[in-house]
Length: 195
Image (cartoon, rainbow, N blue to C red):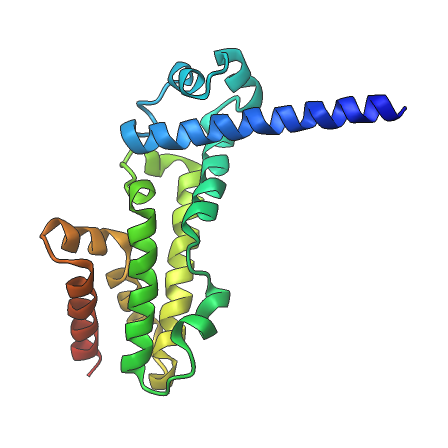
């Protein structure tokens, strides 16, 4: 029986390696071409496997997109609600807490930028919608925690969360505002609005 187990372990490792190559190739192609402009043939060529192998591992985007999302999470290490104590710390002043939150989110956006540009068609995919909802819930939770000293109402939390979303960050970047300047502008704007 031992040789059989060894063969199965070796086969399992080969399957995992193939799956990894397919996901990495897909993620690169999605960043370059977009999800809907990437064909299974493109993925197969980039991963150096057959189209049949790609379909065997991922019959549709519904299986492939979550696998890419998991890889993006591993690569970019997004902030999580559980990270709130580390991100905003125990500073009593909302000014300091907001500065820390802005820095953490903007650092993440800088790391994840190639993967966060999502087109309108891609936003229709359930996996993308679920991921975006999760990111919004995380921003909401982190914003609520950063604002906690002033006991914010839900409208305030939602507004801060929306202003700290990736599209706002990306818009500032496209207007040639550096990451540091964008952080300062956002910090001053939010504090001015909260006062």
